[in-house]
Length: 355
Image 1 (cartoon, helix red, strand yellow):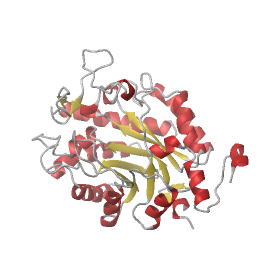
Image 2: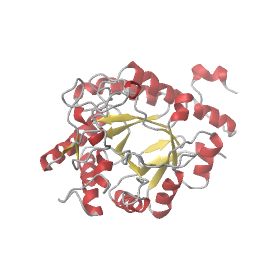
Image 3: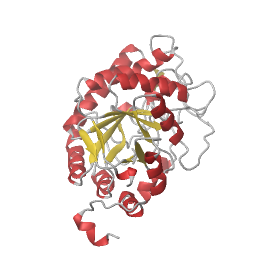
């Protein structure tokens, strides 16, 4: 038996296996609109056999984009094309998830293949970034504008409206992006949150923004559909966010009805030393799973079928969330099933290629 290809039921949704397509930014939108690139990119992952396909970081507001070319869900006009994509994904026996995101101080940047540098507000395709505190991500960047209470309330309302649109667009899973140095992560970490009001200082105060976002989303997101949160479970920096903080937060998230913590790391401290190796972040998913009642997803240089299966088989995580290997081979799940000796359903159009 392959544990990787065992089903997993979360609330009303039963995933056919434990393979999740991680959100991967494509920087290929105009005014936030999905297009045929997204249809083919995400559709290929669905024909390839993954159980859950999560969109790239999808901005809840124009100022919440990492770059001017990010996918968005801040207006109703975005729904039509997204609905086309989610419909196709479900036709392939998979489910579509959306990662709702706000980039915070890491907003207003150039596309990576054009240098990825911060674009100033007075420059073309640039705007003023916002954050919990007026602290720049790096010395080479301009400091963001510190959010006041009205600004915080607006962002929370933007997440709520985006969640309602996600439901209309046919998504069955929402993942809130609380990782990689973006706005939610910035509030959580004392490295980037220097506030002295009710949103800063103590662990409880720094967690408040995320918990208020969750409350708002749950007002419009059906209780029977899964809700995930992606966390950077450590900043890899002394005196910043730690795995112990993540475990404590995960316990709170479980009590609030969050189903799974997608356990990533890093991205909030420029120059942090991260020890890259195969499966280097799995230990953090395992720590959360073993110390809480919440499901976890493991990420980080997971590239082989046996490696992915071992993570599930040994109880280190409940799902494997894969990125670059699926860019190299969108049909990795079909190949992995073959390598593990499991018979899975192929698209009928591809059956002639079965091993």
